[in-house]
Image (cartoon, rainbow, N blue to C red; front, side, top):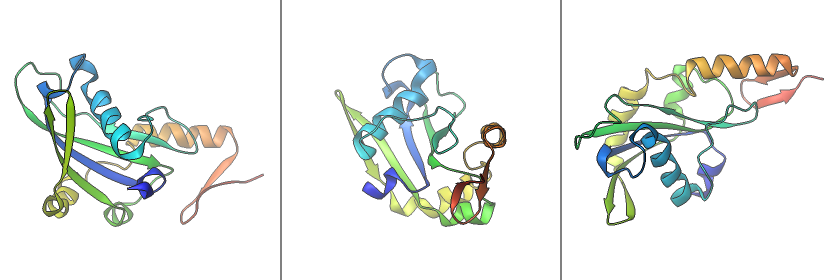
Length: 155
């Protein structure tokens, strides 16, 4: 999974919200950090940056005190906008997450990938508002995005 450290990838994790430790309002961040530590060997990076950031879609009921199962959607290594066609081509991975004592287990669910791609295709890669903010940051820094090569300095 070393390629996940650099390649744009959408990760979908099914988890019981009450299994995620800590503040219920921070469950999406906590789960993202747990996944990143285990698979990417780096922290979750939601800070908007021109070169790359991670994004998450927060599911309804994520902060419930009931044992609800929810889909957590994470976009890793966001470097620019993707069309809906490009989004379907990037790697998608689906995991069932479970907590056994204090250990998290992320079980790959390859047979769920195609259905997950269809269901998640309406979610804008990297977040619509976030992509707009990063585009503004690029304009302010005089950086242009080249579709097939990521970003390049225009100066």
